[in-house]
Image (cartoon, rainbow, N blue to C red; front, side, top):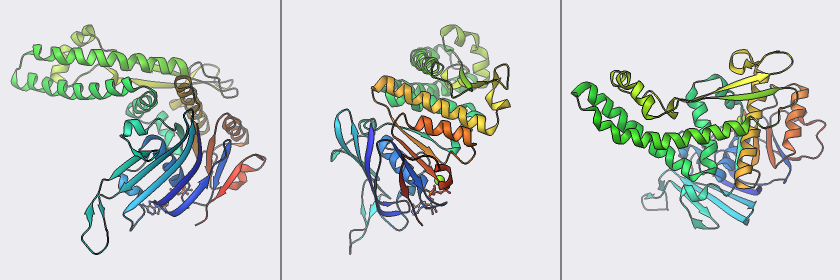
Length: 359
Ligand SMILES: Nc1ncnc2c1ncn2[C@@H]1O[C@H](COP(=O)(O)OP(=O)(O)OP(=O)(O)O)[C@@H](O)[C@H]1O
Ligand SMILES: [Mg+2]
């Protein structure tokens, strides 16, 4: 999969801009706040139909404008594909009359309107930015979101099971509350138990598969990383075991919504395997995430038969020379777009296409 060309209009700080990408490495260079991350956000939008940072999608529409447009021209196994995303604030000014209502988002594939689920999947990307370090250090929710994101990208059934599980969980928790407060019979839970067990099993088995796959991917240099899937299994027996506690807590205590991932690091320095969140330096944690993202890349490739484009946002600044070299080596294995504020980091890398952004 490749991005060949990207046209932006009224997207974030870009009024009108057009970019061509190398099938190998493209580096976006520019000082702070010129729009480097915005550009990656546009690529991510073309890939998934979503933003990785906007809370409200209209934040992506340029200030004072009504309508933003992202046009991506990609090449995948089906040939050339045109992906367009149009974002608005829900209203559009069409001249003298009052503003008219308009859809907030439209996604087109080769000019035809598509639902998000059919839009996504034409162009896969794996994104890595400084915020991803939170994956190692923050709460388990983020790690579950990571797993869901990877697996949803390649598995429609996972998306369905995940939605169904979430809904069922809410209903079941509501019932647990009523059992506690109103003395409702526990037999009412049976239907939801079954639904959660069926979908929950699917989610954990897929999560397990991904973790096993990741643990087979090559180490980076002399640093060995490993994931441990801390699984909260759901079964009739486990639900039975927690029956009373669940009623008093009015919440479901077992199942994939309680899963976690533990990052381990093993290198010559540590002698024995250690927890990366506890003992890892920032640089080591960064490499751990890079390793994870590469595992994600290979995993998606193994399912889709095409290697996603790697997007690296500003990851050089905390790495030393040796580790920057590792990143550049990794970048050679698929189309890669890298942003950096410091062109200094690019010294010694000859075969890269440079895009300079200026304020
Ligand atoms: N909707 C919008 N309309 C116009 N400009 C916007 C919009 N949203 C964000 N911006 C501008 O985009 C700029 C930030 O761009 P971006 O995050 O891409 O910078 P960057 O080049 O990645 O910088 P850094 O090196 O600091 O990470 C901000 O200065 C902000 O004012
Ligand atoms: Mg940035």
